[in-house]
Image (cartoon, rainbow, N blue to C red; front, side):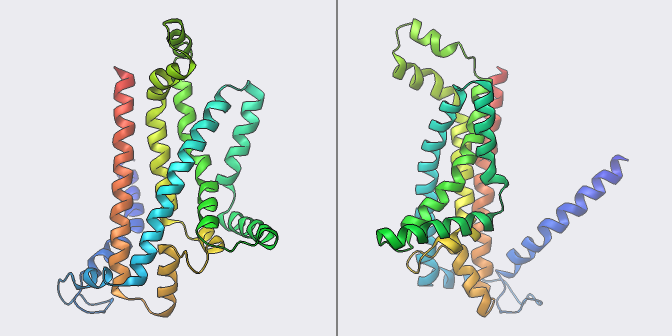
Length: 263
C-alpha cells in the first residue's frame, strides 16, 4: 500500500512540475523551437533584460509587491491584535469575515474592486493606476497576514504581557519587548506570503490596473496573445526561482520558530 501511495504521489508531482521543468530547459535553447533542443545558450536571458517593456513591468511589480506586503503586514498584524482581544463569538464572526476574501473567487474580487474604483473615479476624478493597484493588492493580502499571525497568539502564554507590566514595562514596552518577538514568525510568514501573492497575481491586477501601471503577469499575458517568445520562458524561469526561494525562506523561518518553541 505504501508503494502504491508513493507511486501515486510521484505521478502527481510529475504532472505538476514536468511542464515547468520543460519550460526551464527550453529557456536555454539556442533556437525558438518548442519541440527540439538545439543547444545551450543564455541569449534569451540577455534579451530579456534588454526589453524595456518587461523591465518596466518588473519594476512596477516589485514596487507594488513590496509596498502591498509592508502595508498589509502592518494592517494585518494590528487587526490580529484587535481580534485576539475580542470575546469568543465576536472573534469567530470577524475571523469568518476575514476568510471571505480568501474563499471568494478572484474574478469576483477583481470585478468588485473595479466597480468600486469606477464609482469613486467618477466623483473624485482620479484614474486607474498605481494607487488602485496598490489598494487592490492590500485588500487581498491583509486576510493572509491575519491568518498567519493569529496562531502565534494562540501559542503564546497570555500571561506574558501582564507579567511584563508587573516587572515595570508600560503597555508599549511590554508589546515590543514581549508580544512582538513571540508573534514575529507569524508576521514574517504573513509578509512573505503577501509578497508572493502580489508578485504573481493576474486576475485582480488585470481589472484594477491602468495603462501606466502594468504588472509583469499582465505584460506576459499580452505577449503570449501575440506570439510565445523564448524570452517568456526565461522570464517564467526567473519568477519560478524567486517564488521557490521565498517559500524556502518561509519554511526556514517556520522551522526555526517550531524548534524554539520545542526548547
